[in-house]
Length: 231
Image 1 (cartoon, rainbow, N blue to C red):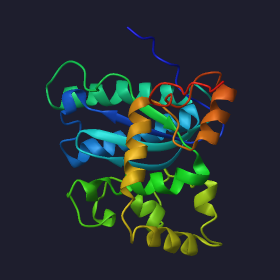
Image 2: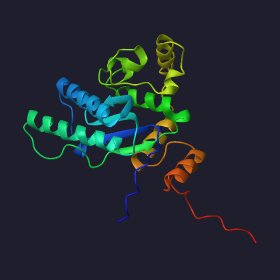
Image 3: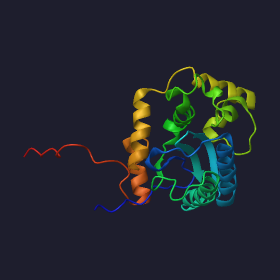
């Protein structure tokens, strides 16, 4: 079996994270479940120095957009949530055993190119799943914080979000405008592919930079055989 590549991490570089329920089973069954998970996330992120920019809690999986302060910040945060939430969920629903589907998946993001796109991708999940008509209609995401300024204490804006305007009202208005269009299909596929496979989300220059800094391959090898040199 091929050895797992170490997770990609760079200081101050955001990550898109997905954690799924085992066998894609439900991990949230009632409002209280979502509320408890968010409390666990808030407390663990504060304790382990993870900045949360966006999230969505779906019925059987979670998306997060975060910037960890240290290489171990994210794993410690998710371990803390996992212990507390699984104990709560198993006790509440009189079940035993694992809740999560193995290790979480993550991708290091070229923030200049993909940060706002990834925020839209995350907060548009309930719309793509045809659960609601607009992200504002879904209570378990960061859209109301980022798009309307509903204070919840968990969300800390990234500097690229801050650059959308001079005031909170300008930033929120500009952010809402981004949701007038769907996330491009190519971007949806790029985000999914990079996250599921653990590669960077960015162009070849960003991939080369990350590879040089982390000393590991950051993008898949080109398909096909290398071209033979002509003598």
